[in-house]
Image (cartoon, rainbow, N blue to C red; front, side, top):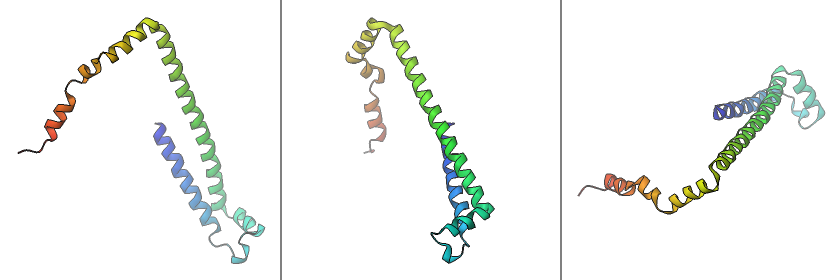
Length: 122
């Protein structure tokens, strides 16, 4: 869902650029880089719509960033609490199991099976 919202924000940002360009596309040539260009753009509804969408998009990206940080922080807190419940002895048992090579036993001969599967036939 977070990815969909991020893509939606990116699309809205692209739309705001298009709307703002459409708003000043027919501006007089002598208005370039002058205050009269801003006056011209403010009178055009398309440019104002693009500007409003840009503000809404930036605000939503801010809130999505805050929500993402809170989710990561909550995950870290839950992980830390579970480590404390496991205790030092439980954590040592997990690391010793990993060192003893049980990961190799867990995955078995996956490497050999993959090599056999993709080995060219003779």
